[in-house]
Image 1 (cartoon, protein in one colour):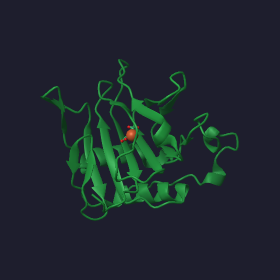
Image 2: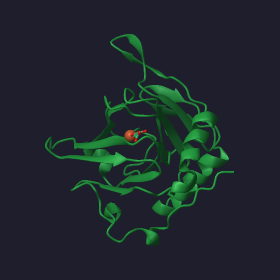
Image 3: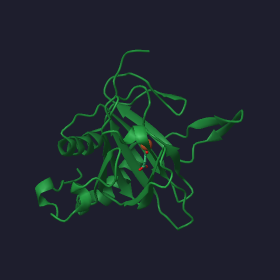
Image 4: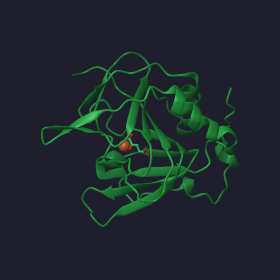
Length: 214
Ligand SMILES: O=C(O)CCC(=O)C(=O)O
Ligand SMILES: [Fe+2]
């Protein structure tokens, strides 16, 4: 059984930037670099790597089937599907480890999540392009909690209208990033490719999907 303690908010350095939004306006982003504590987080990466049912999705570009530049997986309560980048995902039930990671994030956000999208970036050539998490199943101002394990990757925001507004940060092993407020309406985010010699990274974004409707 993996020990994975969470640093309570009141134990964080009071000078931690996590208390201030990293976006200058039009949304809120908080980063807790060592949220999932040192002890055991390397095991978390390995256990996720081996226990998650990773799949290689494809997207259609100019009529051609092209592999996503990463592996993905989708876990959720219940059996509702979720459409992401044109792919209809049928969820798997949460594993005990995913549940534990989710509950820690829920405590920090003071919010329940019913689903998780997982991304496996095998090396620096894997990436996720500019997008916002604004699928129809997400509510108007979604809270999204993003946990990272393994290699550090750069995570970037750019404002949809104000082209000069850009924010960049490093998502390291055991970090928790929270996006909330109007972030998804006004900002795009991405994990760019890098030519650095980068090891594998797993990211989990916890979401609260509203079922029903069309
Ligand atoms: O890998 C990351 O940190 C970002 C993942 C992401 O943006 C998403 O799953 O929508
Ligand atoms: Fe995203």
